[in-house]
Image 1 (tube, helix red, strand yellow):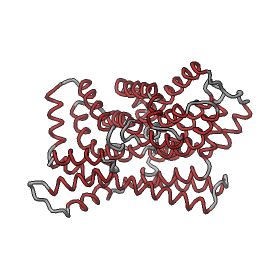
Image 2: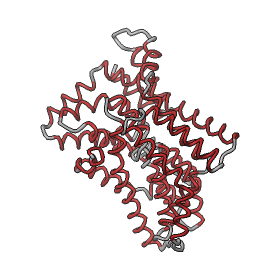
Image 3: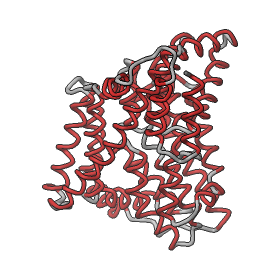
Image 4: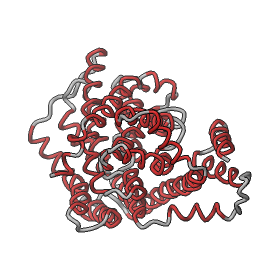
Length: 423
């Protein structure tokens, strides 16, 4: 059954079948050909079981809040704030793109939403300023990858739900790796700008900076409401998502008055489409993961790694390498669902803090967003930049170095990563 599952899954991926369909179909085929003679009714049952979770209701709420903010023009306010703060640095537009993506990531928790919102504005602006299309797309893809790391994070909600780990602690622990990636991207931009002569804009006055901050401050409060409410026990992550939606509506409809009812309808439609895609991925991954569990793959992997080494650091190196390979082929949300039941017990067996181990996996899975052949952000930003994925990949290497260093520091410095959770 396991061979059938693997061959069918990778065969469907090679045929460019969407990941959700590939996981669901390969899982169903494995069950059909199983010597256990399991009834096909098991497939819809497993599709439903995983998504029948109250904690996962946070996902559509966060997606809707992000869609409302994007349609309500908050991405432009974020870009205006970033431009006032860092636009005068060398490689100014590129630095603005990184800062705006980091800020917007803290509002949506979705890399795709961040790439769409900031990329649709910043990539054309960078091309007009003389930046290569491939570089602009690669930078935006890498910047948007911060989305699943800086809270709120959709994949952390999924991870916490499956592993029984505090989502609030995961949110707090994701802040440091997110900041490390942001700083690394700033440094790469500075070096590339120095090589190619990309200058910055005129330095904004402090009055202009305060004005930009005033225009964006209501939006910037959103992550504080979400994280603060969860940590102080005011509401659960699911309730936090609902509060974020209500707050986003209040800001865009009544405070800024930047969104019409027609635009609100389009935001709801966008969120419904994205939620449907994510839900289908989660459900299909549930079938796929259940087949793995039937074949005792989690137990086998734990026993195999423990037989190879007693060192937790060698073990985590093996785990990260495995996750990076999986991330090359599987959507990041699906990868979380499939890998958590397999790898979470392994992390606990080697004595890793469950929150720290969860952040390691989440940062490693970020590679899935920017790694071919499935990397969603590569294709999304290449389409916005009107260039090929091959051209984007030519400029991607220094950004992979940034992600690698951030991952290494996340692994080696648990005290730094968990610092905010222990305050």
